[in-house]
Image (cartoon, rainbow, N blue to C red; front, side):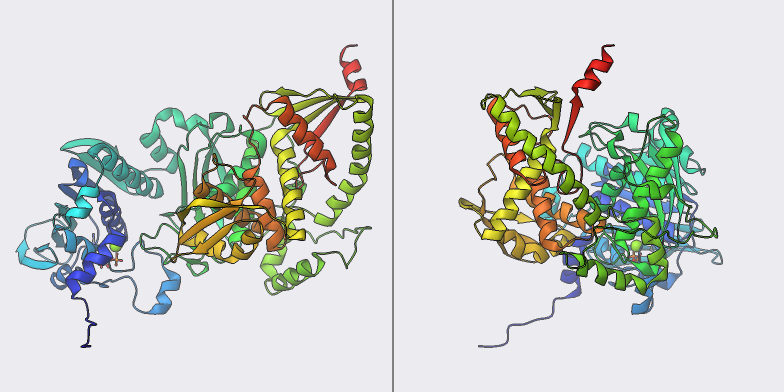
Length: 615
Ligand code: ADP
Ligand code: MG
């Protein structure tokens, strides 16, 4: 057979790269805006026509480009922002891959006009389908204007893939908002089809938010500020009472770059704790400043996903920052943070001395208990980083597990014997009532027992999964039609790590590509109403969250995450049989009083308490 391997011509390579970087008009808008910011502009105009399908143009008053640069910038991997591989670890600019202009030029007509401060006359360059058409001197102001016309004109498949103008315009607005909120120190104008729709002057962050989202927003915001050695956090969160039913305005920036991170979003939501009703979303505009060396922005072609070196710590700090901010705003008596009294201790900010940790003695401590070795080894890692060690004391990972387990052990004994007695008395005819599709009410001898249905079920499922794993008896049902799921790279990595554990729980799951998995069997507890993609993503999310919050082994983490994800939710109406089943199974558990993560499952309102109220 003759040789068959060929090197792709640049034009083809660029088209392929373009598919990654430029997915739709909004990606082009984003890249052009970022270039203008990198050029040091303090005034930027974005002009779009037909939702960017005909024209996306960005004009800035930044540094401009020389004649040569104006041509060179279209080459693939042509960038002025990094020189060597090591620069990748100290990126302060928005761009650095040198792909954006080359990509756009491969799939559109791109016209640049640019002039530097010391040039008399500017340069105009036109490139189409990766071919240089013209380059000539032109009259223009200092700065750069880049027009991208007829995007995807030579890739009909992509063009046909575009959504309606309304949808594409919304995507562009979204990018515009992200950049505009990130940089209130830059003035922005946005023109859509010839009309000036947004005019944003330079100013403070609150002003920018108010300009974009309406003046009433100012009253809804709480200021957040937390300075630590690892990260500085600044910005605003929405007051809990303004939480919305839809994922509203959630903006997280790292070194002024908008990023997507379900994990850190969770930290923020977690900081709100019980202050927001389930299924509502808070708004936030938070800026993290961290050493560029401690993050990797190069993990995703569009640079919206990044990797942190100290993700677990950042999670804790972010959560605490939100709590602090809410604490100083909510001066309601009786508002207490559970478990995290340590956060009221010395503020880690600035040069204030940090109090030496007081010694806690745990009388029930048993070095042979499972998990001890793991904690010890994690401790050792931390000792290499004195700053982090201090962190651990100020922002303790959730709880001292063995202490809580001990407490639970004592109390649960009383309760489970009670339950047997209770049942004897009622001859198995116990009554169950549901309140607000959330609590199960059960009259008991000592008063009224109130059980959180979701937490109870979580406990029941966890015990069951654990038993199954121990006896290797996970019941699995074969799917008639295997299903494919595709995850983000980050999530795919985690799923690969827990694949073995997930399989022992009854999932038949195999890798099919870098981020795609095929599922051909599921544990018997999963019914059709659960979407598989959703379940796996949920489990992976929880695994990642638990990992930061608790020092526990992976297997326990996976069990917990499954239980959490599959438990019935608040809001689900239950029949009396269903309630009975959950409650009976709950009391068959060794630890009915707490969820696997230590949250209370039930409360008893005693007869005395009730009588008191009627005095
Ligand atoms: P990157 O931003 O990753 O470097 P781009 O393809 O977006 O790659 O841009 C290539 C180069 O062109 C940039 O590094 C920069 O030197 C130059 N450039 C692009 N846009 C502008 C602009 N608006 N003003 C000045 N220089 C620009
Ligand atoms: Mg760029």
